[in-house]
Amino acid sequence: MVRVAAVSAEVLAWWLPLTGGWLVLISTVDALEWLVGAAAALLAAVGARAARRAMSGR
Image (cartoon, rainbow, N blue to C red):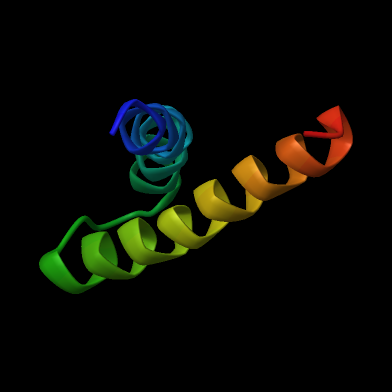
């Protein structure tokens, strides 16, 4: 259970700034733009975690 919490916290730590960056860079913030940005940021956060794990050799 601790591992799931750690993975979730790391993905959330990546997802929040990535989503925030997306919202700052778009001109109009409506529901569809937020949803697309949040989904893309989630994919990028999972990819960033996987890349960090691959580089650390764990």
